[in-house]
Image 1 (cartoon, rainbow, N blue to C red):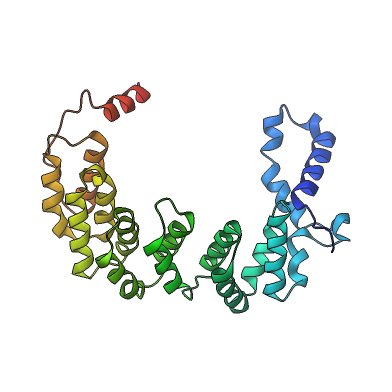
Image 2 (image 1 turned 120 degrees about the vertical axis):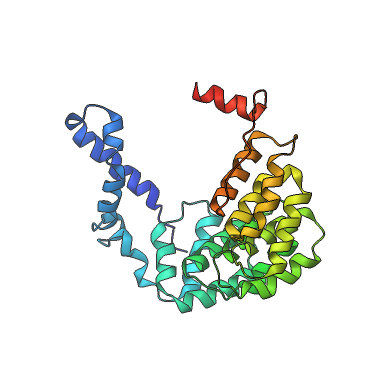
Length: 277
């Protein structure tokens, strides 16, 4: 089997050579390092000896089969060799063919890192093909489950069709982290009173997470939330961070903040004040 090409290592050698040749043109290393992003782009589009004259940016253009590219991606991960950006870019260039291969791979993928990459690539393709699978992951994943969180994030960027699949799962959910994850998705799709009611209920009931749910109410954009938001501002137990987030939501929804609070002694307020002094 052909040895994998370590693009990062090759670029590192290129930079070392460039720095040695150009050290007298710069006052310090920081100035030289500032040139690295531009040098990377230049290197990517130059013919290179380690690729037999091919440009790194286009080396993987020789692959037209997304299955081959996915197999190569898994090899890079398995052998702990840095994954080249052009490989992933070639996958997205293949469009619909890559989408089909990525969706098929998602359900069978054993490597969590590969699975996260596949989710990201499908997002770049703006694919909605894995919508039902993502809803399932979001509605069943444990708290802190990276796959479930990535699926929820992807769902929030999809079309309103998400609501028909995710809302019933929200309504039946018992676990607090599942409710929070699904409402994070659904707050991107205003217009269904059931979403608004669930949002408002979570904001009122989960007092230790009011800042989070205030931000979701803000994103949902329904001014009917103003009454509950304003009521929360007079709660004697409200902390400074919650107060600020709720104020932001009120103003974003067209309301006015009429309650000014003194947060002297609040740990969040004192910490921020110390940082600003």
